[in-house]
Picture 1 (cartoon, one colour):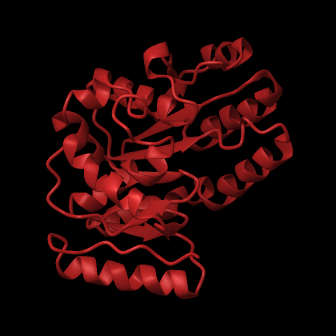
Picture 2 (picture 1 turned 135 degrees about the horizontal axis):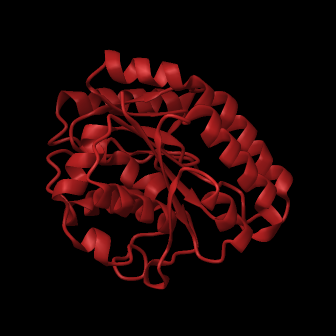
Picture 3 (picture 1 turned 180 degrees about the horizontal axis):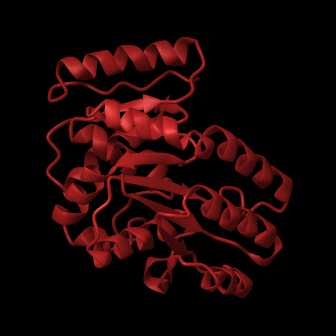
Amino acid sequence: MRHAVLFSSYIPQHSLELGKKYVELLKTFFSRDTVFVGVNRDSCGAWEDLLKQENFHYRKVEEKFHIDSDVSGFMECLKMVRDSHERFDLFWLFHTKGASYDDLAKAMKFYDYYRQNFFARRKDIEEIMTTYPNIGLAANYLIMNAAMKTNDNSMRMKIFYPFKYKPVGYFVFGTFYAMRGTVVHEFLDNCEESFFTKNLVTELGFDRYFFEVNFCVISNMMGYDAAALDYKEGPQHEFLMRKCAEWRKDPVNYEPENFPWW
């Protein structure tokens, strides 16, 4: 399988050690793969200097597309993929979660968790994608939406692409996930140009959690199922399983429903 990394980065000076950790992670788990790095504005110069030393494709976000979240960096990555004209079987999307925190220890905990529970399971994810062609997304946790706005925003994705199906109503907590290449390429090849030319938040009205809540469901809206690597037994998981079963029976007329978190 040909893999590509879509890595949205924001590394201020005080988080440079976190940035170095992610560079080490990329070299450990994706040394033979194509790595695209979107550099959010206000990242320190030392971060760009570090990227220049590696065999990564990286690009800094333009002022027009700047958003105070991982959205900007991910969008820059997708633009680089489109411009490259390369084709990939699997995309890995993740970001420098927690880099903006004053307490870097918390960001390091996120890094340690995903290194052990997501990246170290690369072979498992490859096997899932190879064995089950109906799976379009793999992530640690799928969480059911708590606000109808999130489901509405996912349905608004139709302004970019003529999706045939409704989303189940989950999102990927943390924004670390792997997505089938055919899904990403189908979307990038045929989506409306406004996806690339407009600011998703300031001009199109989506929010700063676009890749955590909206982009992650494009595979679902193309008819693919998702694989949760981890889950906790309980009401939320039971609700998720019930809604997934309903969706599989009739994804066209399926009605999303939010989980009553409160």
